[in-house]
Picture (cartoon, rainbow, N blue to C red):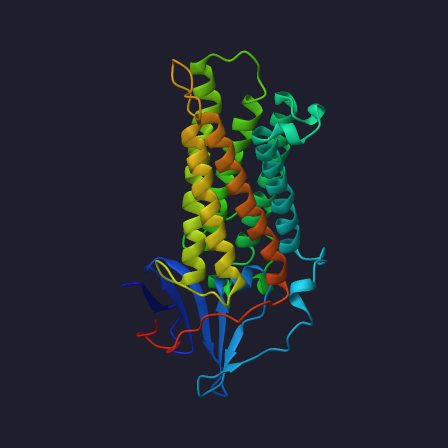
Length: 315
């Protein structure tokens, strides 16, 4: 079963949809006039309005934002800062990957190994900052809290919480752990005269584990948007964001595999393959991070809505 709906109170007017029977990804409320208000997990935590369905099931469109694809300035919204920090971090990794692959096209002063490793480390700090803010965003924007005593409307800001049934929270937390490992990986890479064993333990191991965290996080984010194992929703920027992030995570995983240093030393093409995969992954993250900005202004189609929103058979 891909998704089911469970009631969260004694009323037939309010249910949550659980993707895979575990993650709450949608909250549906039937209004007195027959309309249905659907709050999607990602949209809710990003501060976007719920989608409303008329009594006949048609989508009631909210007033569109003028030129959402050209809007880039929203510093009062936490999600905007998350996007900006991810953009900067991705750009640092892309720059480091490019400098490692084609140093002949850049000034010698910026292609030294110490400089490139510093750029990677700075990028990892921006990744960690964005991921940490994303955890806070998920804690304080849990769609399952709507209409309950934990609703943000009834309480203040929270800095800590445990919300494993929130796919956005789970994805953000796992990604945050991955970024901490990338902090360790990139910091250790700046150490000089490491033996092959020290390099594998201090640089490669956190790189691999961090990449696994990114893969898991990216797939959890896809579940949050899809409300099931998988979906194809090309009209939604959110779908492109999570899919491109997933591709970037795959590229980072490939890079980590090629970064392993055996006792006899790496094969001739291994560093080149690792740097190319890093560049590809960073480019994917950069594109996905940019798409998070127009997403905040309602670019694209509203969202996928269930055909039977209220009731035990809702999908």
